[in-house]
Length: 427
Length: 169
Image 1 (cartoon, each protein chain N blue to C red):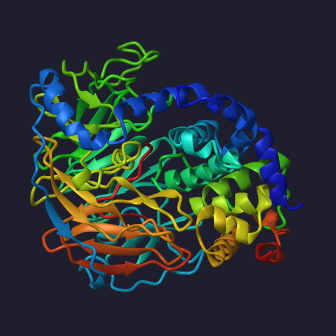
Image 2 (image 1 turned 180 degrees about the vertical axis):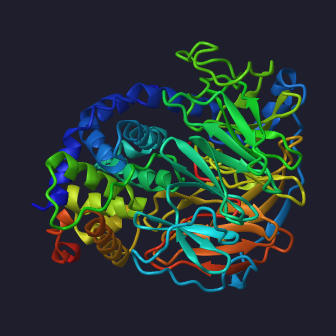
C-alpha cells in the first residue's frame, strides 16, 4: 500500500451516489428525437421555424472560406518573443519589481508553483500573485493579490489596483480591459467593468441575464462580447429558448453592483444546435445576440460536444473584425473509442453569427489533442500545443496564407499560462 | 420497447462504483457528476448495441476515462485547487493537511497524467491495461506515470514512498 493508493481509496469513500439516470434518459430521448443528423438539419429547421422567432436570424450561408493551415510549422520568430530563453533555476527568478519598468512582457509560464513573466528582452520575473492576463501589447500584466487585482505597467512599474476581478478580455489596442468582479458570495457577476488602466477611467456595463451570459472581451468597435455560460441547464426540449431567469436565480437587485441591465432579450439556442453570442454597447447600453449554428461544413458536426471550448475563449481579429473560436472535435482514438481534441478554428461575422472562415489545423491524434488557440494579435493567431508528451510549443498562424511558424518552445518542466492578449479566468 | 429497456437497471447496478471512479478522477462532486452523466449519455445513445456486450459496464468505465481526459482538455472548465506552499521533506504535517496537499498536487497534473495514476494506483491496472483503456501506447503510460509521480514528489515530498518499481509493473 502506498500513500497514493491510500489517498485514492480514501477519496473514493467520500464520493456520493451520483444518480443521474433519469437526467441521462431525458437527454438521450430528446437527442433521439432530434435525430443523429441534427446539426446538418439545423439550418433547414431554423429557416422555417426560427424566422418567426428571431426576425434578425440570418439565413444559412453556403460559402465558407477555408484556409489550409495543416502544413507542418516552419521555424520562425516574433520580434517581441525571445528567440531562445532559458528559465533560471528554481529560486533564482527575481520578483517583478514595482516602480521600475522591465519592458514589455511576452508570455507567462509556470514551473510547479512558480508563476513567471518572460519579458521581451528574455529576462524572467516571478509574478507576485495569481496571474489573470497580459495585454496584447505586453504592457499591462494583471494579477491578483489578496482581495485586489493589480494592473501592473511593465513599461514603468506603476500599478493600479481594483477589487479582485477576473480579466475576461482586452481591447485590440490594449487601452481597455474587461473585468468581472469576483463576488464573495460566489454568485455570477451582473456586470462587467471596462477599465482604462492608464487613466483609471471605468465604465460599468450591465449584463442582461447574467446567469446565462458571461462577459468575454470587446469587439473591434468596442462592444462588450457575451457568451453563454457553459454549465447552464439545457433549455429543455425547446428548440429556441429565451434567456429567462432560472429557478433559484437571486431576485433582481440582490447584491448587485450595477445599474439595471438593458431591456433586451438575448437568445440562446439549444446546445445541440449551436450557441449564441451577445453584444452590449457600452455607451448606449443596448444589447443584441446572434445565433451561431452547428455547421458541419465548418467542422462543428458533433451535436453533443461541438460547442465545447467555445465559451472559454473567443478572440477578435483586428484586420477583419471577425470573432474566432475553436470547438472541440470528436475523433476516433487508437482503440476505436471516441475522444475529443481541438478542432479547426472558425471565424464568424459578429453582425450575423454566420461562419465566414475556417482555419484547418492538423487533426488531433491518439497522442496529442492538437494545437489550441491562445490569443490573436497583430502577428496572427497564436496557437499552443501542450497536450502531448513533447515540450509545449507556441506557433503563430498567418490567417491569410495558413502558414504556421513555430516561434517558441518551453522546457519540459514549464507550462505555458498565457501569452500577450491572453486571459485567465474562472468559467 | 422504448429503445432504453434495461438501461435504468443497468445503471443502478453499477452507479456506486462509477461514482467512486468519477470522483477520484474529477476531485469534486460537481465535476464527478458531470463526468458520469457525460459517460452515461454516450452509453445511452449506443445502448442498443452495447447491451449485447459481455461486459457493458466496461464500456461505461472506458467512457468515463475518455470523458475525463477530453473534458479536462478544455482549459479551466473544472476549477483547479490552489496549491499550497511546498512542504520541506522534514516538515511534520497532519493528516488533513497531507490530504489537501496531495489533492492540490493531483489537481496540478494534466488530465492524462491523473487518469494514468488513477488507473495504476486506484484501479490497480497494469501498464498494458492502462494503455488499452486510454488508447495510448504502453510507453506513454510509463512516461506519464513517471512524470506525474515526479511532480507529486516535488510538490508533496511526503509521498516519497512511491517507488519507481511500481511504475514499470
